Amino acid sequence: MTQADLEGRGGSGGARSRPSPEPGEGEWLIEQIVSAVKAGDDPQIRRLLTRLAAIADVPVLLELRQRLYDDRPG
Image 1 (cartoon, rainbow, N blue to C red):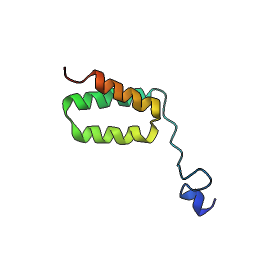
Image 2: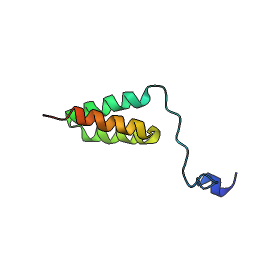
Image 3: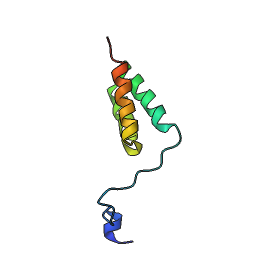
C-alpha cells in the first residue's frame, strides 16, 4: 500500500470509503436525531450527526430532512 492509498488518494478521487452500516442503523439514527431535536439536546444532536455522517448516503440524508420537516412545530 502506498502513502497515497493511506491518504485516500489511491485512484479513488480522494474519497475515502465509508464503513458499511448495520442494517437499520440509518433509520435508528434518524429516530434518535429527531428525538434529540425535539428535546433541544444540542450535544446529543452533534454526536448523532457525527455518527450519521460516517454512514449516510443521499437517501438517508433526504429521509432525515423529511422527518425533521414533518416533525417541526406547527
